[in-house]
Length: 406
Image (cartoon, rainbow, N blue to C red):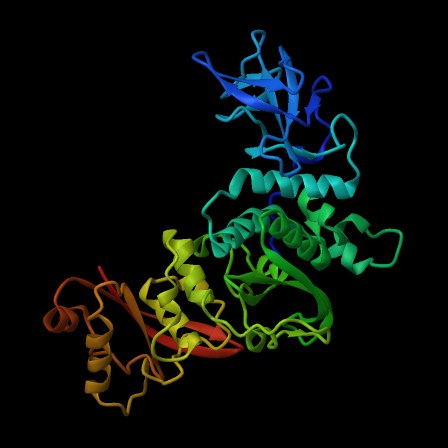
């Protein structure tokens, strides 16, 4: 497994500033010079840091006020940065505390919660949909955690790092096993206003073994989905072409999850496909949410494969368990097939101007040797690239002809 950069979060540490005071009541004021904060007794902070719960949600942010009592923004105060809203930030994240946590060392559980609160304060904004919140969580969490193989192997012994089994391990130390990943996803989801639950059961390691495992269910637009951040991360490698993760274990239905998960606890049914793989990938590629992609002819898996081929996302296709052959066999050709079959396929496929490429599965290198750049130019117009390749799926060789717009 490829080890990733380990990230630490200052949000979980004691504030390295002179002890700031906390404001439980008061109000923000604005005049011609700038913002200042009026305490409930009419005074205002001057030359000091102050924890303020500005919207009454129980989450405090820390602000610095200058010698005249005005809020400082977009600057550095004694080595600590404040953003455009004046809030203290570390590693790009707004730092937060909850009531009673100011000015003391936080427990490990509080440190994990502080990271989750800071994440929500930084990345979750008004108007975001449940799905957009989930994507923000995954983009934040997956690159920041390394799977702790050693602690899993040493589980139950004094050598194991017990922190790795908690959200503290994932969010603060950047090192976790499945329960740590699931706990971190839960904390981030709750802080973001999502309904979420943890699921305990068995997971398949892809090498013939089932073992104890933990993952999540998340509710998006009223429907539940299975999410396994651990599996998503540990099979990721360096898949830059998939925008950071392979998109195999996110928003699964129960049917999809049962391929490599088993559970006995009672859970809400996960049957919706509205925010499945194709919608996720389109969002990662374009930043747009288009749930219409989850509809249309063919199976969900075929729509997913078609999308990957048309957008030329070869790295993601490498994770397809059943290869790039469509279930109806429409992109699979043998030497006995007529030319018209392949010609019709190519003409229909590339009638969609957004289709960048096609993969035609062949049983022999010479099966479609007549599909040349000249033939494509003469019959479809434009400029083309043609090549041969092969991949292996579950120890099965798959030859293909690659056709792409130039």
